[in-house]
Image (cartoon, rainbow, N blue to C red; front, top):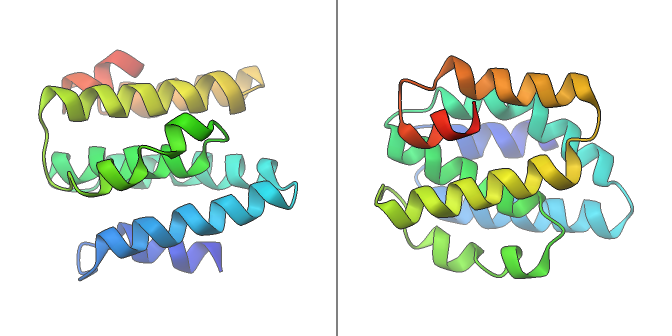
Length: 138
């Protein structure tokens, strides 16, 4: 089911990306509540490079921000989702700040082992010339 949900969220043909962001948020929330935080982390790590390849870059960063917020266990960060959802397609300085905040939360709280940390960094290094926000995570 996760493959389908994430695939639909990533699809450029998805007519309702904001709704799909909410679905991802709810699914990840249920996984966290059921003690499956490891599954959330694994799905995020497996999907990262697909998100960074999304075009336009504004949609990639918006999608990743929603994805990282959904994966978070921080209630304050999770509370930002509805605001971020309404900023779909924008790429203003505040959007980049939300992205960096959510990405660093994920990295610092869920990316535990060294191999995963290297993979996370390498994913953003590969696209670091695409946008300054990516370069900050590389």
